Length: 345
Figure (cartoon, rainbow, N blue to C red):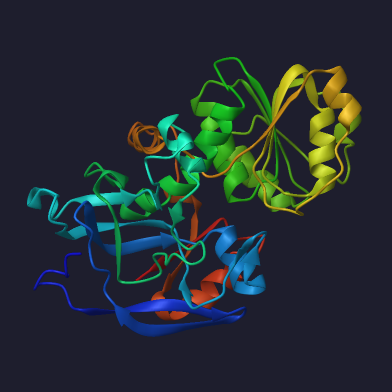
């Protein structure tokens, strides 16, 4: 491994999760670089729902925090050092970080599904450290250069944008598609923007919070619905695809009933490990039901969508917090009036 260059300190400040509800700023070593890695000085990190889950519960499903870990995986910054196998010309590049390292050798990787790699190392997923820190290391091909016109916050939000892209790819959203999206939080709103960018002409977003429905209308939705007032399951929407960004069982069940025959159901939101599904509806309509686990090969698309003005992630930022304020950022992320909290190390 390569030590940080002389221009980079050997230690850095990082916000470390020690136990549920216990996050502290510690001094830790700056990551050493493998030959194919670059070191990025972190400039912006979005707060994700998974960060909130780890902070409050210390786990997400089978992923359990068993030792101190740095949270944060929606990140961007500037390359300040490179590994032995990387061109030094990369130093100084502004980049968006794709926060995962696959083995590149397993069957899933060989088939191009590297997000399903059996040996995946993903930022802020136990025991891998994330980016609520001054520096982070990543493989050179997962440090994606961004155009000068792109803000560093938008570069960080290429990560949740990639979730929206992957969800719409799974939904097979194409020009003229109709899509129903449950949940107008950050991912739901981003999924609506991507659906519009992909050419969907009917984009219905449901959320029980009026303020979030209004946001959805600003960011791509053609219609919004209050699921506490309208029975989605009997409303005859007959859409081509349903994307769940809520994780709520009632929303998932109702959304499945909103899909036309041969349509697609894409489960994105994090909810209970097991829920009841209307199996006869799925069978009788030959619906395709799939999950979303991160993404693969989405960063070039995300960068182009932002650069072309087809999606607006800068406008999603509703709060900025320093490294000493990570707990406040995590708390803010749970409020209905927050779309994206961003940590600025």
